[in-house]
Image (cartoon, rainbow, N blue to C red; front, side, top):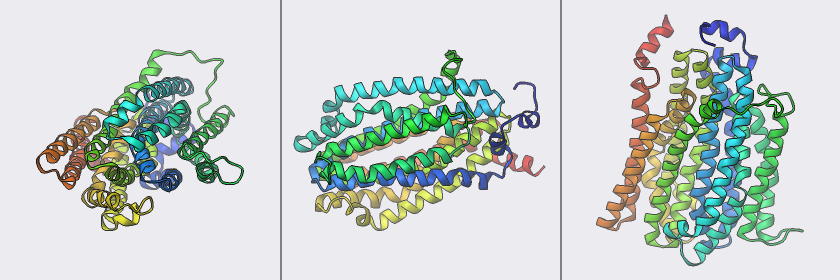
Length: 471
C-alpha cells in the first residue's frame, strides 16, 4: 500500500500475517520451521526407504535409480524450492502489503504455471531420457533400470508440480502446519506401499523398480487432492475463486521473476551433480552407485534447509512487503546461522562414519569405496552448502536472486572444470571430489558476501542494522 507507514499497514492485516511482522524473529522462525523440519524428515524417509528396497534388487537397479535421482530432485527442487519459492514470496509480499485480492488471484496463477512446467518435464524426460542417462554413464542393465524408473516417475510429473505449488501457496500465508500434516499422513501410506509394490507383498503384484515409482506418484496424487480441498474450503487466508479470477500478466510476472531466476539456480545445482555422475561414470556402475548414494545425503540437505527456508521466504517477503527492511535482513542472517550449524554437523558425521550411511543401501566394495571417498572429502564442507541455501531462500523472499545465481554458476564451473581437469591429469576419483568441495566453499562465500555487502537494499549493512535496531 503505497503511502502508508508500516504500522498502519500492519493494523489492517490478518493475525497470521501480522505475527510474521511483529513476533520475535528467532522463536518465530523456529516455530514455523519445526513442522517443516518434520516434513523434510518424513520426505527423506520416504525416499530412503524406497532406495533401500530398490537396493535389494541389485547394484544395477541402485545405479539406475542413481542416474535418475538428479532429475527427480531437479523437478522437486524446481517445483518446491524454486518456483514454489516464487509463489510463496509473491503471496507473502501481497499479504504483507495488504493486497488480499492479488494474493487470492496469485494462487490460481501459480497452478497454471505448475501445469505448464509439469507437462514440459513429462515430455522432456519421456522423449530424451535414454540419451541423457547414457551421457551420464548409464549402460547395459543399469541404463535399462534407469529408463524404466524414469518413464513411470515422469509420467506423473504434473502431480508433483501441483502438489508442491499448492503447498507453496499455503506456506506463503505463513501456514506451515497444514502442508506438513498432509505430507506426514501421505508418508504413512507410501512407506508400506513402496516395498509392497516392489516385492509383491500380500495382494499386490511384484512390480520391481516400477513399484517404487508408482508408490511415489500415488503419494503426490493423494497429497494434491488434500491441499486443494483445504484451499477451496474457505479456511485458508488465501481463498482462490475460479468464478472471479482474471488472469493477468503482471501476476504471472510477479511469480516468474523470482521463480524463473530460482529455477536457474536449481538447474545449476542439479547439473553439478549430473556432471559429477558423468565424471564418476568412467569408473563403472558400482562407482556411480557409490557416488549417487553419497550425493543423496547432500541432496537431503536441500529439503532439510527447505524446512527452514519456507518460513524464511514467508517472513522475509512479508517484512519487505510491509516496508520492514531491517527485520527482513535480520531474519535472513538468523536463518543462515541455523542452517550452517545443522548441515555442518551432518557433514562432519558423514565424513567420520561414511559406511554407516552407505551400507544401508549396498555392500558392494567398489560402491562403498567410491561413496566413502566422496563423503570424507565433501562432507566437511556441507555447512557452506547450508549457509548458501538459507541465504538463497531468504533472497527469494526479498525477490533478489542475481547473486545466488552467480554463486551457483560459479559452483558449477569449479566442480565441472576442475573435476574434468583432475580426472584427465591424475585419473584419481578423490581429486574429482576435491573439486566439488572447493565449489561448495565458493557457493557459500559468494552468497554470504553478497548479502553482507548490501545487495538487497543498497547501503543497508549489518552494522547499520544493529545501530538502527538499538535506536
